[in-house]
Length: 114
Image 1 (cartoon, rainbow, N blue to C red):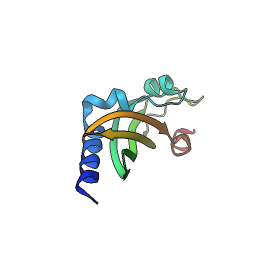
Image 2 (image 1 turned 180 degrees about the horizontal axis):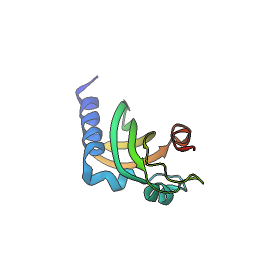
Image 3 (image 1 turned 60 degrees about the horizontal axis):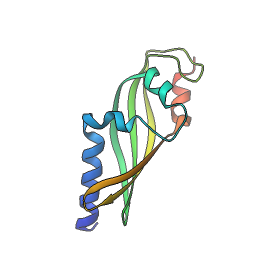
Image 4 (image 1 turned 120 degrees about the vertical axis):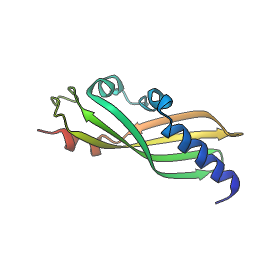
């Protein structure tokens, strides 16, 4: 990995692991985000893998949270869940100038089914 690629990895990892950015990471391009924010408390985000190609950085990460409210027709379970999230960033000159996110509900829903 080149020095430039490593700096991008460090920039994205620091962004994801910074608690102050949690509200940014909770938002994705999916319609159910408000439900998710209400249903899952104590959200934490950790990096699993980061890939860099030019300006583009893709992060696969995990959101760990407590299922404390209704989500997708499922009542709260009180269980701690772990859901995969994907983030696509564009990094130029050490700054994140664009990003998009997606939750993998296929890893989330089986954990909260009664």
